Image: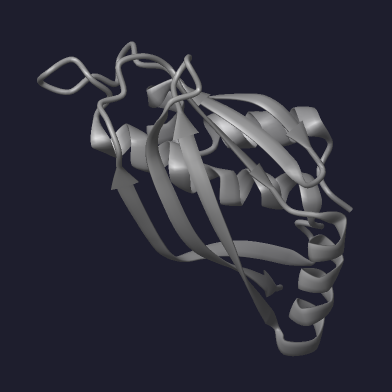
Amino acid sequence: MPLPMEIARQLTEQQIAFVKRSGLKAEALEPGFVRLCMPLQGNQNHIGSMYAGALFTLAEIPGGALFLTSFDAKRFYPVIKEMNLRFRRPAMGDIRVEARLSPDDIVRLQEQACLHGKADYLLELQLTDGNAEVVAESRGQYQLRLR
């Protein structure tokens, strides 16, 4: 059974010290859907746009947040196998990302992990600014593993 949403929010925002310091916020946490926001304030680089590491963090965390809202943490755990980020334009404000897994994907991944001990899934995401302009695109290969 997935974690209660308030616990999932706390783990998403505070479990990793770097993420906590960044000020990342979970704006929506639901089974199969997350929306996260990285504030520009405190995450600027030398030219005033968002630091690449902050954008990378925002691109990577949805895989774990989706896990927390969609899978039983007593039975499974997630790992990231590969992550690529393509920067499209400077991020000059707060940046958001949304990630989804369909109910069918959630069931399929659980079944595959139970059968084989692991199940791979791909998240291709767009990081957007306040005008819905894409500032970066990510491609992350995650794995659900059986405990």
